[in-house]
Amino acid sequence: PIMLSQTKFTHRDNLNYPFEERALQFGDGVYEVVRIYNGTYYLINEHIDRLFRSAEAVKIKLPFTKEELSNLLNNLLLKNSVSNDAKLYLQVSRGSAPRNHIFPNNIEANVYGYIEDQARNVAGLQDGVKTITERDIRWEYCFVKSLNLLPNVLAKQTANEQGAYDAILHKDGIVTECSSANVYMIKDGTVYTYPTTKRILHGCVRMRIEKFVQDLTIPLNEDGFSVEDIALADEMFLTSSTSEVLPIVTVDDTQIGNGQPGPITRKLQNAYEEDAN
Ligand code: PDD
Image 1 (spheres, helix red, strand yellow):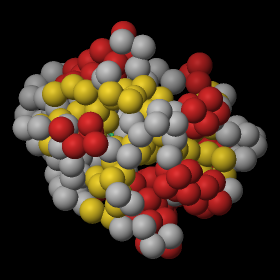
Image 2: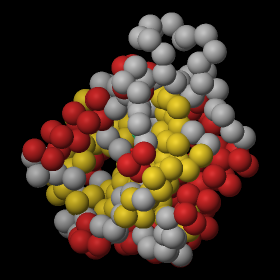
Image 3: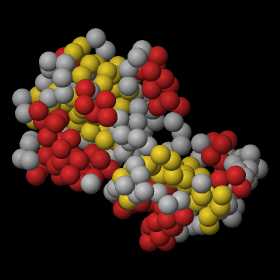
């Protein structure tokens, strides 16, 4: 496999990553995960835009323009002859230097990216998944796709230990998002989700959901919903680049609707399917 390393290409075995690296010592970096269908990136410009927003928010200087990055990523696909369903992982850290909280002078960002196979979650997409609720203990800049993922890792691990797919996070009783996805509730035909404030990641798939509901004339309420509201939900689903539009059929011990993915979720899954292919 060929990796992107800085703005060059190298075989995976040749990548040597320094130990005095701010991603490793401080989680001082940002990242993206981009879905690839049949060898083509899905929503690549949205992901590139978000990477630039994340980097700007934490004052990391990116060593390329958006156009240069787009070309590098297309070359990465070609060099790996990707033709199947896969994903790109792209990480940019502030750089390497002896450990010091203060930004070192003249530091250059460290970039790497690689492509990995990613099969679609056929069973989950068909039948829906179980989730749990967890307190959202993350920082206030969740719109930054930061490498500081410890609260997300802990929440997802707790879910996993309880046989659930993901954790639905809540702050002061209000549902924000999942540990690695955006989350939605449907009640009486309206889709509810958390607003795109600094408290959640502005998902690229979430952006498409905004368009799909408009096309399908399904009302969207972006004032969010509470943990209590879940008991009365007709349908629920989550979205991300790897999970797509994934129905949620259980939250803690509560069954959602009749325990099967609902009709609006199915419509949005179909809209996604058409958009992505
Ligand atoms: N996660 N919220 C969080 C906290 C996320 O980590 C993600 C994506 C999303 C959905 O964003 P998008 O629709 O752009 O994929 C929402 C990726 C897939 C990950 O960390 O693996």
